[in-house]
Each structure stands twice: as C-alpha cells, then as structure tokens.
Image 1 (cartoon, one colour):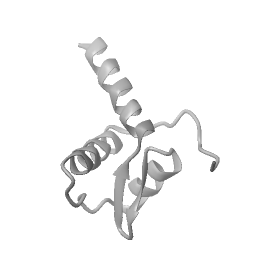
Image 2: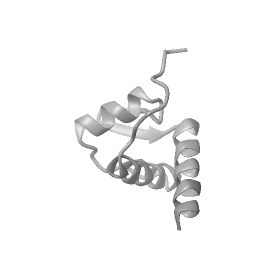
Image 3: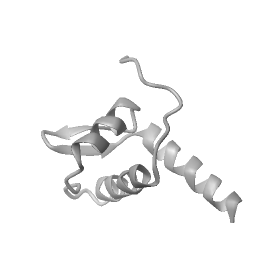
Length: 77
C-alpha cells in the first residue's frame, strides 16, 4: 500500500475538481481534464486514482473527504 500524505489542506477549488471527478466517475463518462497541480495533489492524498493516461477516477477516500467537507459546510450555515 503506497504511503499517503495525511491531513490534506485542500482548497475550495480542489474540492470543486473532486466533485467534477466524482460526477464523471458515477456517470461512467470521461472526466474533465484537470490542471496538473490539482491532479497531483489529489493523487498524493489518495483522493483519486489514475483511470487511464490523462484521466482520474475518485476513490473511496475521495468520497469520504467530500462527505466530510459537505458536513463542515452545512455546520457553517
């Protein structure tokens, strides 16, 4: 199992991209092209995995991160 960076400090833009990747994965369609610096960060945190060259798919860890973020956002309202 590869070592993963813990406690990621993701930006709102990172979460937006993670949501786009989740939607594409769920709908079984090609994900949108992701900026390299964002893709590298999401891969490093284990939130996405390579689907094929140039394409990413969300992982269970990525889904959990989005759920946690959505819960934090709801608490702030």
